[in-house]
Amino acid sequence: MSVADHFSLVASVYDALRTTDEAPVRRIRELLPDRRVIGLDIGCGTGRYSRLLRGVLHSGSVLVASDVSAAMLAELKASDDGSEPVLALRSTAEQVPIRTGSLDLVTAFNSVHHFDLKQFLAVAGRVLKPKGQLFIYTRTPEQNARTIWGRRFPGFAKREQRLHGEAALREAVRRTPGLKLVDTQTFRHPRSTTPERLRAQAEGHHYSTFSLYSPEELREAMATFLGRLTGPEVTWVDEHLLVIAGRSWRDRRRQSKIAATTATVPVPAKEPITPSPG
Image 1 (tube, one colour):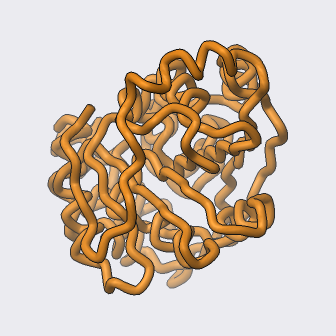
Image 2: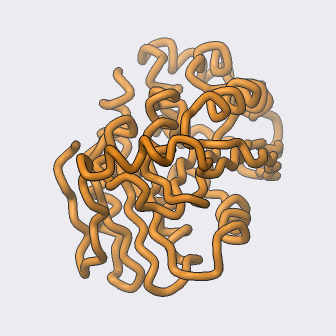
Image 3: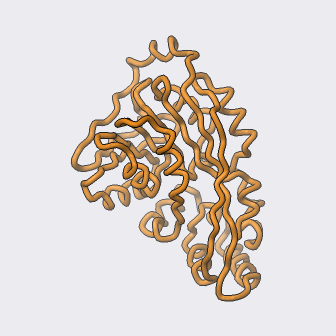
């Protein structure tokens, strides 16, 4: 199964299967200016983090949520209650049709491993305003290996080769024109659940890593995994990394020259809009 097929199949149950962490969103809000902002959440999926982020932004702020999956964006639009709308944009992470130098923030929650990292960072460097900020919330390979899946589910950490290490992310940001590394922060989340819940998550492919197994491999690995769990409750600690970058002053002249060639930021609307990919 391809990753694209994976997201199409799990879109309707994605929110129920995944865990959404509030701590990094609260940290991002602390670092934002105390005013309305215009932002873009890239690789938003069903908008779990987009909705959470929009809820802590100042009134009048605009948040666009982009994803390549139409099925995921359909779930985002279905969840809109009209109070704090998130604007839906179908687009790849590498070719976002947003005007140069127009955004106060860009975010990517648990999605950067699906992107071409160099191209994604170039997009962020282009669309951010001076003093704009980029936030990447992700898991490193080392952190992935320490999860309940990495420690107990056969082959999980070994098969997942898309994740970026902290050093690689830092270096990639430093090499990106228009960006500067500000800080990194590690979050640790205590988890507690039941073997039945973990079984449901694995059967529902709540991580795209499960799409890297054949059906037979997944059945065998799941049986081994469940056999390794003891007791009615399973506890562990998940770790994630928040990379914080800012818009640098270099290349501003180059950025201004290409500003006229890109699309404008969508404006707030009562219903989410879905522009065509750029």
